[in-house]
Image (cartoon, rainbow, N blue to C red; front, side, top):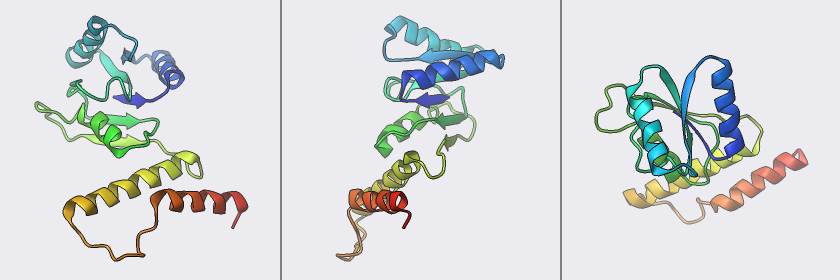
Length: 157
């Protein structure tokens, strides 16, 4: 399952899969409920359909794609929860295979900074939920840390 946030990225992925002879379906926000369900059913039931190209937001909840075992997050969301929801579309009851999720992140790009920010936010949330004590002064604002990192990179420091 290939997840993306932007329509042009989804369009390009679908063109590439078609050029490579890989049959795919698309799950997007502008689809009717009938067209959406037909795409889901084709992906889960038709062994010739190799890929579901999905909108991260439109297909992130309420969709079962357990016929897959690999998830590609081609574009990142600003929240870990949105990405987790997308992965959970494959990691469902009835899943017989281990699920592997791939985040596509180019080095030295804003996506790398976003991934670091998301991971840091997820770590803060886990500590809050687990009740772990973190001494004052040891945790810098996630946003401030990301901003400092971007500025250091821009200034070559």
